Amino acid sequence: MLQRLILISAFMISTCLAQQTVSSPPLRVKDLPGWEEEDHLSALNAFTNSCKRFTVLPDNKLVHNNLSEFGTVKSWKTVCQKASTIKDSQQAKTFFEEAFIPRRVQGNGVFTGYYVIGLNGSFTRSERYRYPVYATPPQKYLSLTRREIDSGALVDKAKVLVWLDDPVQLFFLHVQGSGVVFFEDGSSQMIAFDSKTNHPYYSIGAYMTHKDLLPRDQISTKTIKQWLYDHPDQMNTVLWQNPSYIFFALKEKNLAIGGEGVPLTPRHSLAVDKAHLPYGIPLWVNTTLTASEKPWQRLMVAQDTGSAIKGKVRGDIFFGEGPEAEENAALQSSSGQYYTLLPKVR
Image 1 (cartoon, rainbow, N blue to C red):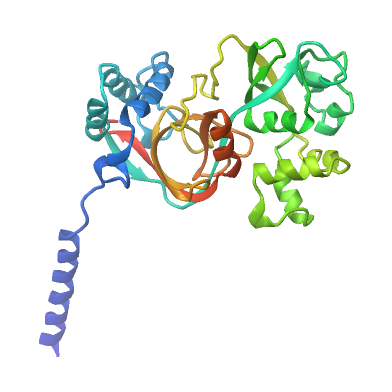
Image 2: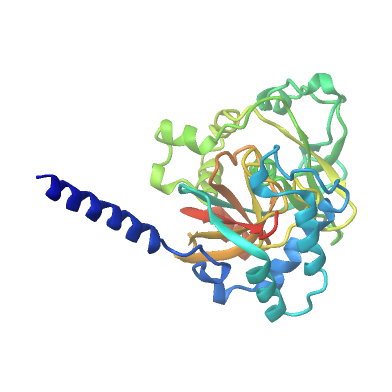
């Protein structure tokens, strides 16, 4: 019996050692799904936009919430310096493969989309243009709800930047965070998020599902917009379910600026929950483009956030502007995951 126990113990030890010996090798950037098909140079350009943030920070500072896993500012300055010397796609591809280690963020999450919304507007109020886009009001008015503001609570108390012709488009300007206003003389003006009221964001899609106004599997920006246009008598009831209200600022250049303070790059900028991820880090996103049902496997950079973007794995894809961007963003809602790309030396 003793000899049998010894043999069993020896077998178990050798098995454990064998399991340790054949452990899988660490993941490499070049192993990421879809890596070879990526536009590496465009992704690099998005990344270098974020590099400007690191240049003004002290070297020994941790880049996110005192968490060592994302490294120090110095480590990011080092890779940013290398990135600044790259001129073509092959060099960009090699740079990411040699300078970074990918790490899978555990869990699956939802990936939605946003875009720069196009709006019709005027600097002068009229019967057609009567829906105001407000600049940030004095602090004491930030407790107002959407219903109160829509009902006139900020009249003569906050500056109106422009007047729009469509209350539904105004609401979705608040959701998207930036837009281009087109005027009748052919000129245009970019407007972008400046601040918000103290109220949390609430999804009107969730409300519409709860009230059986739209089936859960049909909820999208496109279907919500159409429902609102088809039911003008119920429009305010639905819109006022979201008490949060956004204030805007005029922008000198027609560039969409994210929460990081840098220009957004279409299809390479991602809005994330900054409680979990720092601005400026590259992410390999593995999800599906809902509009085409094709894989969406891209190198993106965390450069923005939003009231509805909450969770460790949660992303909002910036599609840019124009009809195709609007279509992609309006339909986008898919499950997926991402990998953080971190400097090899942190």
